[in-house]
Amino acid sequence: MAEADQRWRKSSRSTTNPDCVELLITPDTTSVRDSKNRAGGRLRFGRSSFSGFLDGIRDGSRDGSRDRTPDH
Image (tube, rainbow, N blue to C red; front, side, top):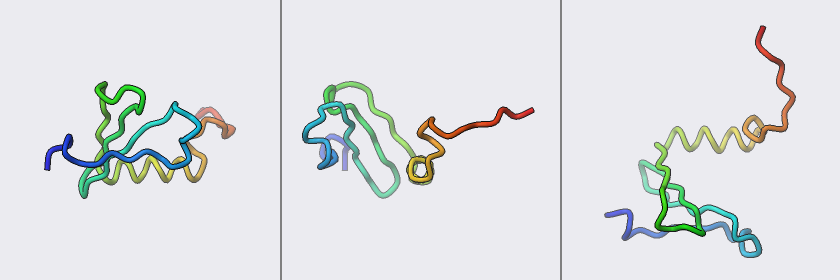
């Protein structure tokens, strides 16, 4: 099935905030687009890459707020 024929999803928590993204999840990939510019560019991730990204968000390693010690 072509990407255009599939259903994009936006978080139900984004109803008051227009600055969000939409996801299109297939068995092999997850595509991400800006909800304000649906005709604009899209990012497509493999299943394991996107899963790793979400894991990093959950554990805080991708939020930029953790103290990081330089590697020396």
